[in-house]
Image (tube, rainbow, N blue to C red; front, side, top):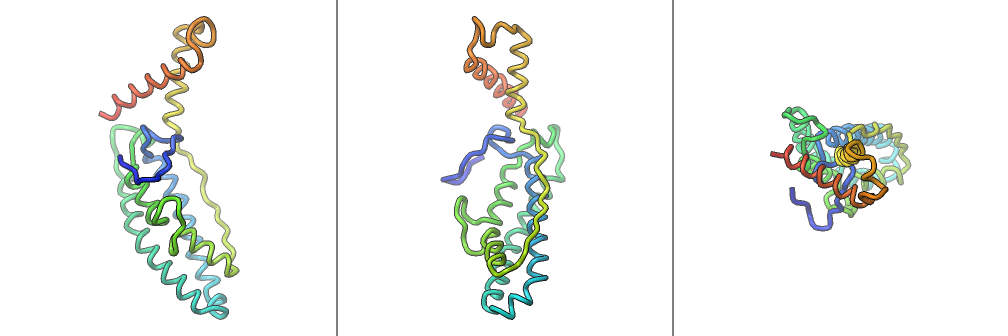
Length: 191
């Protein structure tokens, strides 16, 4: 799938450069915790903040409402993708569009914090004195690309242990062969 200009490609945990349903599940779990914590923070701290600076709270609340309006449909689309089933495991099923849509709902422009972005709102409420205590779940998605390369290398070693690091192939050649086998497997799986 195409990416916006300036996007930094991520290699870890992707399938052919696309993030997977498993990674989308990890992202949704983390962002749900962050959004819930931010909502709780404004509910608890908002009245105190309003006594000090009603204009800042009003602006924050306006931006929070706009963020929720962007996040809600992206979250629904992500959930729809998470609920879909296919012949491949979640670690092998691409979900790049839904992943990017969720990210863009929280940060309008890649690599830049804009007013009203999630991180902007977090910074503003913390600067005002709120305490946030994120207990974000850690990712559990499998790194399919890396696993494939490691398995391909293991297969090559099983075929002939002398191929690797001795008179046969160098480590770079072995990685190249492993990458070729992995790409072939991925191409066959994407059909």
